[in-house]
Length: 234
Image (cartoon, rainbow, N blue to C red; front, side):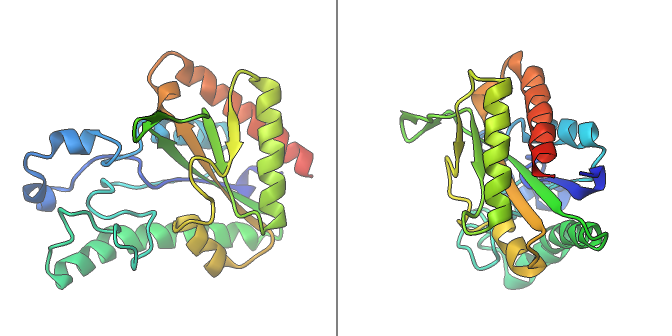
């Protein structure tokens, strides 16, 4: 599979707040540093994978607490409690400056890649907290996809198999810790791109793996296993 057949994105790449909106986040330092503010470690992995495959990478430039690039505009949490109360014109300004351009750029890249006539795999990189509501998460890696889409089923299955072969100590689960069909950017793209040659996998990484020396090794495992999975799909 050609390198241009891969596109990487990282919607929750940073916890940065642009200067015009910092007044809304006074006293929110810890909140911004938490998982509510960003997906810790996700951008580092996304950048490593994009470099490995010489593929395009799109990364959000503001915290999800400003506006969540991975939510539909009708979703009740697309704006956080810190921005939900802004006047409608200010919320639309956030959409016009941060949300719409990002989504349009990713979609344009996918359409351009599809125009070459091949298949396109879009990997959206996220991370999740090791503990949720007091209970430990039971996987290191999650692969989210739509089971109704044959191409995505094959990508997820082959990638999981390759990953377990390369790093059998990892617990890899499909559609965990979230469902691949829940509201998100990938769901919207499936509806707008509408091609059986397009497949999106949301790569979810347990943040426990990204806090220690295993992070670099994890990036190697992910790159090798994705390469092997793509080879198997040919």
